[in-house]
Structures are given as structure tokens and as C-alpha cells.
Amino acid sequence: MDIFLQAAAHALTPPAVAAVALGAFVGLIFGSIPGLTFTVALALALPITFSMDPVPAIGLLLGTYIGGMTGGSVSAILLGIPGTPSAAATVIDGYPMTKRGEASIALGTAVIASVFGGIFSLIVMIVSVDLVSRLAIGFGPAEIFALVLFGMSTICGLCGDSLIKGLISGVLGLMIMTIGIDAIDGVPRMTFGSINLLQGVNLLVAMIGLFAVPFIIEAFSDRSATRDETKGVANARAELPSPRMMVRNLWLMVRCSVLGTGIGAIPGTGGAIAAFLAYDHVKRFSKKPKTPFGKGNIEGVIAPESANNAVTGGTLIPLLSLGIPGDPATAIVLAGLMIHGITPGPALFMNHAGEVYSMYVAVVIAYVWVLGLQLIGIRIFVHVLKIPRDLLAVVVLVLCAIGAYSIRNSAFDIYAMGVIGVLAYVLVAIRVPITPIILGMVLGPTLENEFRTAMMLSGGSADIFLTSPTALFFFALALLVIGLQAASELKLKRKSRDKVETSDA
Image 1 (cartoon, helix red, strand yellow):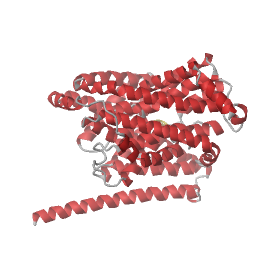
Image 2 (cartoon, helix red, strand yellow):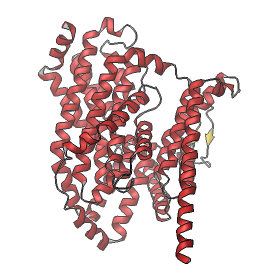
Image 3 (cartoon, one colour):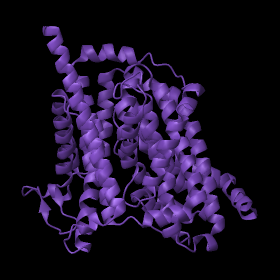
Image 4 (tube, helix red, strand yellow):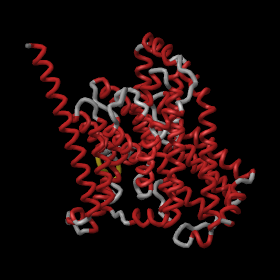
């Protein structure tokens, strides 16, 4: 107890609190601008920490990480353009709420769910860091492949009216992610002799193209319609979700936070997988929602935001206990820890208990700052909707071009963004969902790498997948999800056919 009080005293000093606040603000800004993710913000913040004391330095990195993860929902809800891959699932119901004039409610709900998920995962991390890390480290390539395959099965829940169209969209995502040099064999794939394609298609570039370019084309294609729509959404008031509504969805937030913490504890997964799994979960188990999913259901905002922010605490479990970063962001946090002489691993709590407890306090402070900044900022965010949509499209175009270029300092990424965006506009026009493309690109590399690693470990034998109870469990879940979705679609088609026959009679 004395160590914790000392750590709290160090974490609550003005320099430490100011560092966390600065990190949360910068992460929020970077996370809300497509292309400028919190990973970029962390990379920029890392050199600043070299001359700082350990506690403020760690607080700055953690604040940036948490603020960025939360900030991705701002542009996802207001513009339908996710600021981070983890916020891609929030677009599905968050943006339709904005179109209904409920942008501030969606933003308020998202930040409250985010803070709940983050604090929940922190508590789980404190209580069960050793147990969860042992379970997570037990996931080998075969188990992670099965888990990601189960995540791919959620495409069935995102396919809209047609399962076939959803699967086509998911396969397109898998095809796009294969472009470039093979990470294992080092051979070019689907480059067609182009030097620029050797670097592959960056996920963030594709995501900006898929969501931002259709928005820009629509804004310029029908100016009268955009003015009418702008008048509608500009009436959005700065109001917060009611406490009654949040209490009613408390159990949903708990379930999705558990899911996000578990996914985050498994190295190589991440917030995007957790968000889509949570969205699929709430869509399947919601009890007769008043508003259909995909049309502005508030549960479709709560679930992914609770899950992707719970990942922040989950990723710290293997990071602190085993020294294994779960994603690029936590890899930068790991670098920051080691620069200041804090080496994660089994001996961390014996050698640096004070710094670890200071990290716990810093996470809480970061979420308090994020909650305050976002709730105050909602009144400012809503004013974005009062800008005429064609003018807003110009600003979005400039920001997206800057964001796409800044990822790898490559002008080719701007062209790739445009081409993918035009393809997305065509797909939307023929009613093919584009969200499964993102899911395919997010999960595809992990799916392929873990499968090939497992096959190399087994000498080319598929028995490695069939002898693991954990892998078999996730395979069974994936088959169950696909089977239920196919049966549901057949049932709906049968009902519609019966209605047509009845009306003809």
C-alpha cells in the first residue's frame, strides 16, 4: 500500500499530470484526423521523452496512446471517415446517427463507452496480469490463426442484404493486402512490374480512400442535395446521452470490455479485431432493437468503442509481464520504457514496482483528461456539421491527401487513395458493402502469416490445427456464425418470396 501511495504521489505531480494531459490532447487530435494516427503521434512524442523523468515520460506516451485510440471515433461519427482502423466499426451506426441530427449523443456515448472500456481493462490488468499473460502466451500460430479466422467470419454480419456481396467485398480486402513484397519469402506479389507497388497498399491509405473519397465525390456530385442534407445535420444540438440509457447498456459495455481486454492480451491482434467482434456480438444478441443496425443504433456505437479501448489495458498485460508488445503503438511504449531503464518482464514488479503503479495512475488520469476534453469538445465538434458539405469536402480532401502522403512520404499513396476511393464509390453504388474490405485488410496479414508460420512449425502438416483444442473451438465458432447467417438469409428470402406469392394471389 505504501508503494502505491508513493507512486500515486509521483504520478499526481504537476509535471506528470501536465505530460499526460498534453499526450491525451495530441493523441485526440492525431486520432481524429484520418491518416495521422496515434502511432504517428507516439513516434513524434518518443524523442521528447528522452530528457524527461521516467514517470512524466511514461505518462506522455500513455496519454498519447489512450487519447489517440479514443479520438478515432470523432471523424468516424461526424464524417463517416474513421480516424484509426479501430474506429472503422463505429462508422456503421455512428455516421447514420449524425445524419439524423444525433451527432453529439453519438460522440458523448462513444467517449463514455471508451472510458468505461479503458478503466475496466485497467482493473482487469491490475488484478490478473499474471494469469491473463499466461493464457495469452499459450496462443501459438495455430490458435491465433483460428481466432483471426473467427474474426473473419464476422463479415457475414456486415454483409447487409447479400451474403455473397459481403464475401466478395471481404475477398477484395484480402486481395489488396497481398499486393507488395511477401514478408516471409521476399518475392513480389501482384505488383505487375510496378516499383511503387512493391511497398504494398498501406491499410490507412486504403481506409482513407474507402471512406473519405466517396464522401468527397457525393459532396461535389449533387450540390443541391448536399445543401439540404447540411441543413438537416446542422440542427444537431450539443446534448449528451442520458444516464438512464447508459445504465441500460451497462451489461453490454461490460461484455464488450471483457472481449476487448482478452483480444488485446493476445499479441498480434489489436483494436480493429476487437471492435468488429464486439459489433458482430451486439448485432447477433441484441433483443429486437427499435433502430436497425447500420441505420443509427446506439448499441452499434457502444459495443465497438468499449471493446477497442479495452484493448489499451489488454495490450499492456503481455507488455509488462512478458515484454511482448501487442501492436506498433505498444512497441513504441516499450521503447520508451527501456530508454528510461525500465525493462518489462517477470522481474519488472520486483525492480520497478513504483514506476508500474505510476503507470496505472497515469492511465486513469489519461482517461479523465480524455473524458473532459471530449465532453467539452462536443460543442465544438458539432459546429463542423454547420459547414456547407461541399466546402467541408474540400477541407477533408486536403487533410486526407496530407495524411496519406505523411504515412510513408510517398506521393504514390495519394494516387492509391484516389483509385481505391473511386472503386469504393462504385461498390457503394451497386450496393456492395465496403466495411468487409477493411476487415479483410486488417485481418488478412495476420491470418496469412500465422497460417504459414504454423505450417512451417509442423513441417507442412495440417495436424497442428486439428490437435489444438483452442484452435478447434474457434473453428467451430466460425462455422457456427457462418451457418447461422446463411440460415437467416435463406429464411428472409423465403419470407419475402411468400409475401410476393400472397400479394399476387
